[in-house]
Length: 142
Image (cartoon, rainbow, N blue to C red; front, side, top):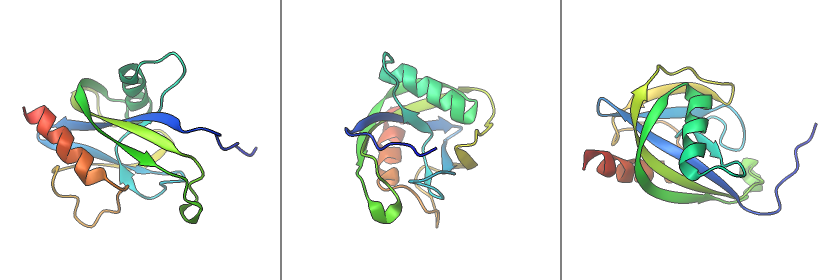
């Protein structure tokens, strides 16, 4: 079954989750960001607050419970047919601390790594990831 492309920008959330000084990176298993490391998160559903959506998406994707610290920034993912990206997303990214659980990925993700916030090495990441993680790290360190 083909999925339709939304006619308007979609609101999404993501979390830079910190545990023992490291941040959780996850690799997307589906387009448009397939194969890229990013932060766990997803679309906000009708009637949800941003933080409710964030807690739900993190639990669904990773099995973790988080304590949300604050808004770290945002990024926009615009349509880019060269990458197979048809949708337009506004992603509100939050800083969070790990509260409970161990990582159990759902089928939207195929890898997870705890990394030092300033060292992603040669990982292929979504655009703007380093800047969002740096802003989130400043919030959790404050």
